[in-house]
Amino acid sequence: MRLDLHGVTAAIDGAPIVSGVELTAAPGQFVGLVGPNGSGKSTLLRTVYRTLRPSAGVVSLDGDDLWRMRPRTAARRRAAVTQHGDPGGEFTVAEVVAMGRAAHQGLLDRETASDRSVVAESLERVGMDGRDDRLFSTLSGGERQRVLLARALAQRAPLLVLDEPTNHLDVGAQLGLLDLVRSLGLTVLAALHDLDHAAAYCDHIVVLRDGRVRAAGPPLEVLTPEFIAEVFGVRAHVGPHPLTGRPHIAVASPV
Amino acid sequence: MSGAFTGVLIGGLAVALVAVCVIAISLGSVTLPLGAVWRVIAAHLTGSGDTDPLRDQVVWDIRTPRVLVAALVGAGLSAAGVALQALVRNPLADPYVLGVSSGASLGAVLVAAVGAPALGGLGVTGAAFVSALLSVLLVYVLAQRGGRLLDSRLVLAGVAVGYLCQAATSYVQLQLDPSELQRLMFWLMGSIAGATWHDLRLPAAVIAACTAYLLLQARRLNALLAGDDAATALGTPVRTLRLALLAVASLLTATAVSVVGGIGFVGLMVPHAARFAVGADHRRVLPVATLLGAVFLVVVDLATRTVDRPNELPVGVFTTAIGVPFFLWLLRRRTGGAA
Image (cartoon, rainbow over all chains, first blue to last red):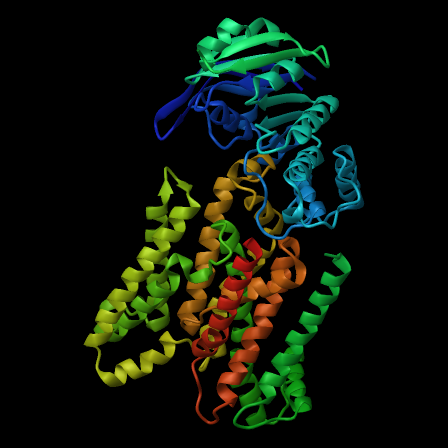
């Protein structure tokens, strides 16, 4: 699945938050969206969830306009793990993941054996199998995020959108989640806070500042110390990770 | 929560509903044997109307419509409560959170004050219905922004409009003469007495249709709880769904209130009792709450006309007397869980 944002402009209450964004995620690519707080990352992602209609520009999946699809059709092609996407109340793990099957069910359809097997499979892929009847509210932060990822996987969509998926997770859970997402083989668009994660996990980086794309390309080409200093206002060191050999970014406050 | 348990619970509630309806029809100022009740109902359902005319009148013309209205209103208010709690994402919301009940009361007292002819010939029921819908419309206008409903504003606007209508109702009540007020008080506090087949056909059909619609929205209500972004990503048409839920739940509540007056706490209490039994998933909560609400109101209505015979007590007083302690217990339990 190929995702294209072409000239996307989106406004909230008349004030433009993102303007003229060009972004492409090729099939199977892990694309990272980075930028300082308030740069418009979440707003841009909302044009892909379809909660905020772009005032100009097109969001397309394999060339089809996402905003012209029926809601359920869109949900069969694009899944998301949003911020604050957990359901309140006492849902079990299996019930949360089953919500992902709504895209494949009509109003009068009942849950079928195949729905249940997709739910079980999705839980297995995120390593949460066997915990179907646990209450979602009793899980740890890392486990909750895995269950929400399983819910997105249950949609069986080839494109996965993530909004700061590692927020509030401990370091082990952060890396575990990113490894997991990377291993899925889906097209991924993820807003990421941590530049080091972006450098280590993404194939392609798009940097947003003040609602505009400031740079795009492979992580090491885009995230130079000078560029990081300019956009984020911090000193940066870029080099191979001493343990993994993958690109590594260390940051420090400006002198 | 196992599906088998829910299946048994739903089956049990359906049986209980039929049982309490038949019992409620047999009890009253004249107590009839259950067998006689069955015979009259069966005769009407099969069209062979040869039963004792006196019994026929008591069972079919007086008690059956009343019991059916109690069941429908109980079911409808409970389903509307479930839907509105999901819509505003607040478990302490109830069908009256949008000012429907206060709006209906204002319409009812206005009819009494200025007379039906001044309001285009609307009776108490009609005026209550119209003013209930007008108050919801006002709440909607206040809570929307460019056609998008914001759940926090919906609750605040509902509370504000509710208070406004209450103040206006109190003012109009002061202008009424005591005998008029006495008659109206019973309606304001909720009463199912005096239900007849003739007046109830349309409201019953509206309540039944709205409840059926809400029962079909279970999966979408689950998604709605995850927030607008996540719900949309899951394939839910959030914007149209919110408007549809608001419209249907309001129509249902306005219809119920205009017929039976302000019966409080059913729409708050019953959904929580259902969640307590089957968890949060609306695919289970909705059918269980709907049946439980029907059983509950039939039983409460029976109590209002039997505990202090021959006097009748307002249903709203009963449901609130049970509801407030329940509400406080719920509140304590929730805080206890969060601490």
